[in-house]
Image (tube, rainbow, N blue to C red):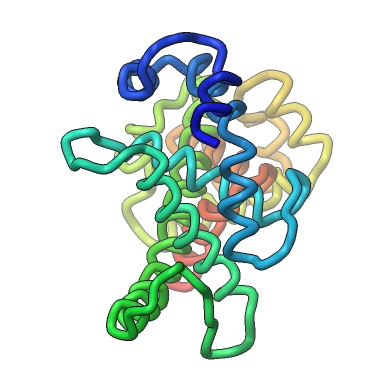
Length: 247
C-alpha cells in the first residue's frame, strides 16, 4: 500500500523532506501530498466506521482534516512514521465525530487492541478530546471571523486595534451608539449608503436620531464597526454586542 502511495505521489523525494517543506509553507506540495494519500485516508476512516467511505461522506472530510493536522504536527524525531501518526490521529478524530453524533453514552470501536486497560484509557481520552475538538473548532471560527472583520474595517479606514480606544467609555453611551448602528443596519438605504461611500451617513442620521452631530462624529468609528457586524455574517461579534446590551 505504501509503495503505491509513493508511486502516486508526483515528486520523488523522501516523505520527511516533503513534510518539512510543507511545514515551511509550501501549500502546493501540501495539496499534492493530501491528494496522493486520499486512498489511505478513506481506508483508515472506513476501518473505524465499519463501512465503505467515499469522498462525499462527512466522515471522509473529518479524516481529511485530521490528516492535514497530522502533517502540521508530525515530527520524525518522535520515532513514528507519518502514516502511523496519521492513522492514530484520523481514528481519534473519527471517534470524536461519531461520539458527538451518537446519543449513546458508550461507543465501541475496534482499534486492533486486545488490551482492556488501553481500551479504557482510550475511551476516557475520547471523552476528553470531544470537548477539546469543539473548543478548537470554535476558536478557529472565531479567529477567521476576526480576520474577515479586520479586513472589512480597513475599507472604512478603521483599525481593528483601535476599537477598544474608540469605544464609548460609559455604558449608556455605548448602548446609544449601538442603537444608532441598529437603525442603520435595519435601513437598506442607510446601509447601502454606508457601504458605498465607506463613511458614516452623518447628514442623514441627523434627521432621524436624537444625538448631536458632534456625538455622531466622535463615535463614528464605533458606530461603523457595530453596523458592519449587525449587517454582516459575524456570529461571534454579535455575541459581543448582545453582552454590551445586557450590561
